Image 1: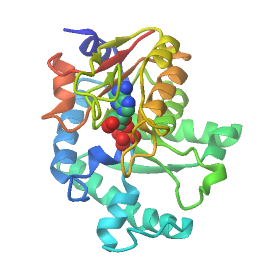
Image 2: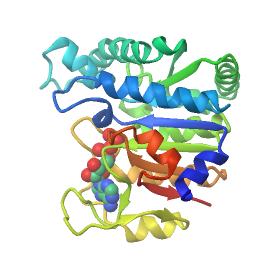
Image 3: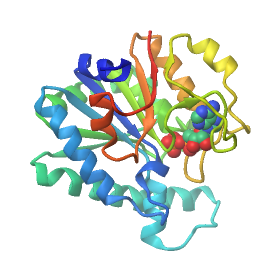
Length: 268
Ligand code: ADP
């Protein structure tokens, strides 16, 4: 056992977020094998009595590979149109992953306004509880079709944190294209060191170098490491721990569960 495997062992309600670069292979297509393998690993946790909610990015990248055009369109309506096309493909991919296991999935699309309105918040919370109690795996994403820049949550790290708080989760796992938090961006610094535990999130935010204004967000990533640290700070304020780990390592979730996988544990 290590800190990460202990956090998972103790948690019953777990929110797991996937970034676009994790879900899509280098060819820009949703990685069906990854999704199928993840579903199996999630299923084994569900069989142990744990409950899983997924926050999934990837609508835009799925839309691009489906349309095979509009790569260079920066116009907001084209980007929203891509997300509208891609959201269907994304959910189709998730459904193909979970159906063989006899698990239904449910789509929940949210906007920033939804979290600011008490009635909507209560509805979302009740729906999440109902779905999960019925053994369904909810898959949350931002509703990009209605979220113009001014009212956007903007990145799914924040959405995942808000969802974890809303559902009163015990743990948030962010699966990214990086093994965890480093003292500086490992993609630019060979000598970057993995930080395996963060207990003082403010100190970590001050000391870690994030490189570039966007904190290293990839082509389809909208967050970078900065939004992951913000997400950690947000949920740690509610007493919820977080794990940041690499989502495309072989059987990444199993490895975290067994204590063989690496990552960063954000603990209170
Ligand atoms: P996702 O699509 O999973 O949300 P992002 O691409 O938005 O992921 O953010 C992760 C990226 O943040 C990493 O690939 C890495 O290049 C970058 N990054 C910048 N600074 C750091 C750091 N100190 N530690 C870890 N990653 C960092």
